[in-house]
Amino acid sequence: QSALTQPPSASGSPGQSVTISCTGTSSDVGRYNYVSWFQQHPGKAPKLMIFEVTQRPSGVPDRFSGSKSGNTASLTVSGLQPEDEADYYCSSYGGSNNYVFGSGTKVTVL
Amino acid sequence: EVQLVQSGAEVKKPGESLRISCKGSGYSFSRNWITWVRQMPGKGLEWMARIDPSDSYTNYSPSFRGHVTISVDKSISTAYLQWTSLQSSDSAMYYCARLQDLTVAGPDYWGQGTLVTVSS
Image: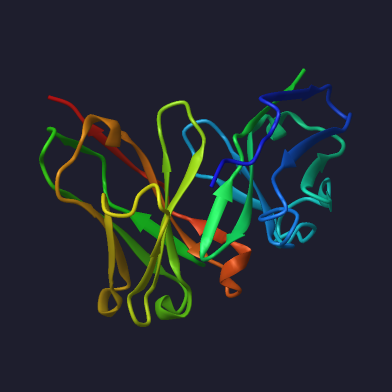
């Protein structure tokens, strides 16, 4: 199963919004509402930010939001803060007991 | 507090075997599947495999099936990832993660990672 497609980079100034796309196929993102987003700071483990397309775990700021349309999911970070600078990965259930991750997006806070 | 604590970094030679571990605490270990994820240097995340600690049932990504083996000892709340013959291309960071109660929803809590270096 091929990796989900994400833009390599995205950026915004503090206080602005940035949206990251995650494009899969009708067999993964398009078929299942099981898209997650993870934040990874350098040298750290990934952290769950969004699950089931739109749900935020407790403790994750409401500046983070998720959505999906067709085969593409999106993560929006509103009111960018310096600590939001990190790599972001999407993932989706791919059916047949498989999961697939995105290629990753480096978010830079200018 | 849910925690997954992985074993320390390893340096091995090609052809050697290795087993790394992941110990869960702060929840009922048998209740949630454990999954393993590879991250090669400077690269993205790759799903490898998952295991149900309650009965040791496993699923593997086609990309990793036959090259690694995952197992679990639920009596000590520990999952394992092992290789019988390492290759230099196995050099990577390996993460264990707990799958959510709804397993198809993917991982929630992650271990800190185990760095494996394979070099002659």
